[in-house]
Length: 178
Image 1: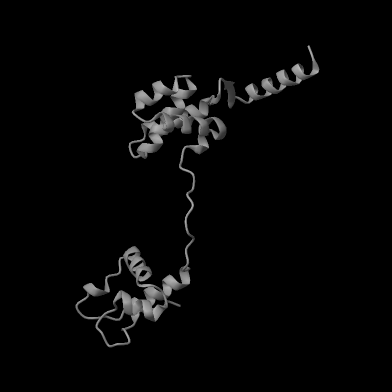
Image 2 (image 1 turned 45 degrees about the vertical axis):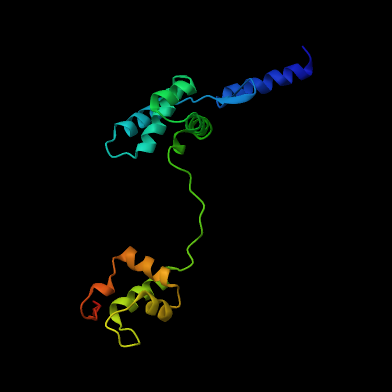
């Protein structure tokens, strides 16, 4: 046997020992191998009454893939697409059970910190608008706080503040206990 062939065989044996990738045809296939603890965890996820439906499907995909069920059969049994099955089989093979949840999604970071939010809440609940109105509007608060009206609306919704629902404006006195 030539040296190149021995290296090739050793490389292939190392890949198979990892249990993640096996080369068949033109596309790599991923093999899911689960420990007994992983299986118990996935069964407990499936048994939970309040588990998110997506996680239950993913757990079922992992368990069926561990039993070497064909991807098409898994997709048919669980009524999901082949793409979904192959995506989750790949993730389980590469990252294990810890990949059961969704990956964090990208998004725009917050532009206003906790201090600005606290300032808007304090202004809303303890002060009157400068134009002697009975309550704050999103526009007047936005001008006073130096943010956009949509930001004020989001903050009010998040904290359940409805200054327009109050018949007369009331100052809320926050007493400090020393």
